[in-house]
Image (cartoon, rainbow, N blue to C red; front, side, top):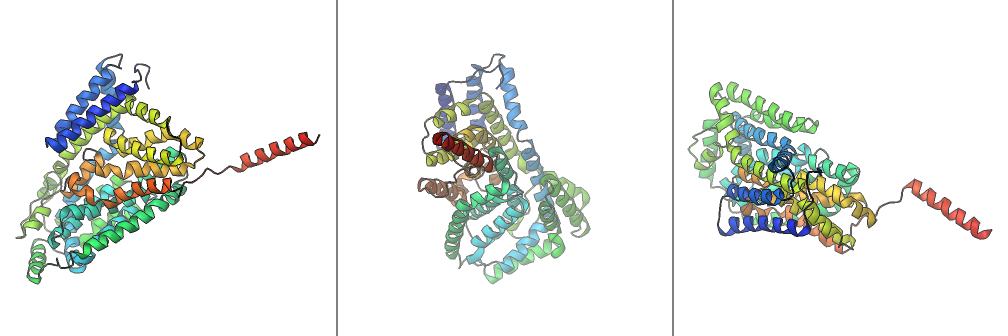
Length: 482
C-alpha cells in the first residue's frame, strides 16, 4: 500500500462493507432498482470512506479505481469479442446449424444432462466459461426454448457445465492463477480439486437427469418441429461447413492459442462463410458485428434468437462491470477487505474453519471487487501463512480459492461473470442461480468434507528437511551417549 494511504480500522472497514451490502440488498430485492444506479451509490460510499484515508484527496481514489479496471482489461476485451463472435456465428448459420442438428438428435428427456456434459467438455477443452456460454450456451438456450423447457433451468445447466471447465481445465486462466497464487503445482492443484468437484459434478448430473425426465413429454409435435426446421432451411443454407467457425475456435483453444486470437479467427471465418455461402451483403455483416442481425424465419422464438449478438449487446454488461471493478479497486487498494479478512484469520483455530473462511472470503471478495481474478490473488497473499501454520498443503488453499472465487462469481449479478452470463443467455442471475447446481454444491461439499476431516491435505516434509531432522536426531543421540 502506498505511503499516501492510511490503513482503515476494522470498524471503518466493517461499516463500509455493511453499507454497500445494504444498498445492494435493499435496492435489488426490495426497491427493484437499476443495478447500475446501485453500483453508483456504492462507489460514492466507498469513495467517501476512502477519502478519510487519502492524504492527497481524490487522486488516490481515482488511481485505485483505475487499478481495479486495469486488472481486468483482458476480460473487457473478451466482453467485446464475445458480442462480435455471437453476431458472426448467427450470420454464418453456425448457431442455426447447431440448433437444426440438435433438434433432430437430442430428446427432451436427455437434454439437461446432455447439455451439462456438452458445456463441460467444451469448457475443459477451451478453458473458458465465457466462450462456452457465448457459443454452446446460446445454442442450448435456443433448443431448450423450442422444447418448452424453462429458460432459467437451461441457463443453470449451461453455467454449471461452463464453470466446471473454467475450474478444472489446465488451460483455464483461473486454474493457473489459483495454482500460481498458492505456490503449488498446476496438476497437483487439479488433482486436489477432483476430491470435491468430482462428487459434486456427479450429483449435479444425477439431479439434472432426474429433472430432465419430467420434460420427456415436451417433445415438439411433428408439425411444429417441421415448421422450425423449415424456417431454418428457408433462412440459411444448412450444411456441415456452417460448423467450421465453431471447429476453428475449438481447435485453436486446444492448441493453447490465446482466447482473443481464437475468438477473432473464428469470427473472421464466420464472416467469410456468411458472405460466400449464405449470400449476405458485406456491409450487412459488418454492421451486424456491432448491432446484431435481424432475421425473419416465421418462427418467433428463432427470430428472437437470431437477432442477438453484436458489440452493442454487451454495453449494458460492460458498463456494469466497469463500475463494479472500479468499486473493487477502491476496496482493495485502501485495504478494506484485507483488514476484515486479517481480523477473521486471527480467530481461526481449525483446519476446517480455515477452508470455510477461505471460501467465504473469496465470495465476499467477488461481491466487493466484482472479479474472481482479484479475489484469487488477494486470497493467495492473505491465506498462505495460515495454511503453513496449520501444516496444510498449499493445494488445499488453491482448491478453496477456486471454489470460493471461480464458482461463486456466476451467482452474483454485478460481477463480470454474472453480468456476462445474464446478458448472453438472456436470463437474470437471480433467475438462473438456483439451478446453477455445481456452483452451490461444490463449495458446500468442500466445507462439509473439511469438517468431516476428508480431503484435508497435510503438507509433506521435504527430503532436505527430513535429512536435516535425521542429522539433528543423530547428533542428539551421540551427545546423550557421551
